[in-house]
Image (cartoon, rainbow, N blue to C red; front, side):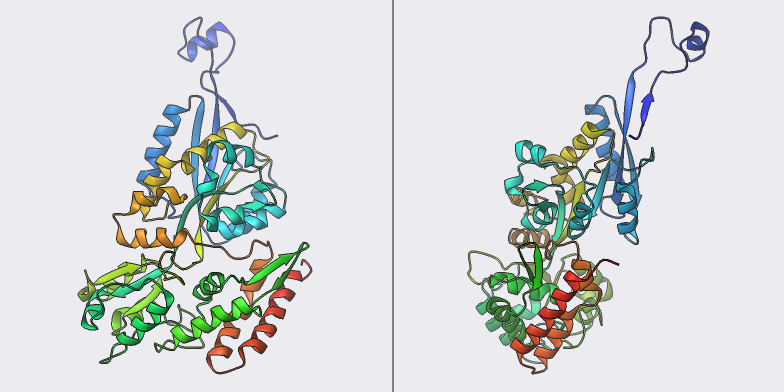
Length: 422
């Protein structure tokens, strides 16, 4: 076991040395514990972390926090090493990307937090896109912390010019409105042909998935009727703009395209609006946000939910302290404060009203209630490494048979998910 016990008053046991420590006879030492917390760069502001640390240490006597900021680059290997470490400075709480949690669960190095999360932490209200990747069978290892997801960023002035008074609330309305926006040199929507995260939402809306698990084995499922319906909607929407069919949303970066052209809509995280206005200050005050529309007006469309979970290594020697940190960071008070500070979506659907005064975050929160994550298999990274979904999308958008291409892409996904380790 790692040992990280600090004696606040522990110079020696002899009277002379006690005097040298500034103690008077009769004073006793108080044992303290330090909880080492790894958080990712830019997940929380320095000011937020300072306030959290001060309040946590004030309300948890005997516990000190040591928060260490980590870079995303190379974090996977670093976390795997930490989960196997007995070093005194190994982390007791770690922030990890929500889709990364299955990798760490598979290695057996995470503490099962099911009892705590069921009893006190309101797990029934957690965003599914954060909670589901942190589960294995009936056990909860990853505790949702914060989320961000795509919304529709739109030009209010171009909507007004086209006579559109309100954002669409259904997918059919979205197609109709986008068609109307294609006039007078304006582009109704810029949607790159390989934006597979956006496609995933349409597939989930139809009841399909990118891959499915049965009997402990995973297979690609782009060839199911539901997934094919999702791809067909993507095709119809993408055709209403001039986005490249053979590139994703970063090639070229869609923020630049939106800023420089007369584009009415893009699908992106709200934070991209800052980059757009920086490139074109004339758009200040002209940008709005609405959730990706769903199939019915009472329910936004499904979206890919990115964000972070908090995990506790099984080898921690300050279990109670680590659990207390997770409880505080994921609790309503500090979770709401983080969301307001960083423009995130809080970890529970019941906290959505707390960010309703910020248009972009409110749109994200509405979509996050229907959010999902990539398939909860530790091997999903193999799929993204040479992503067959992108090639499939381009093939369909250039006229190939959707069913045939979906079968080929599904086979490649299955191969990636069943490839032997190493």
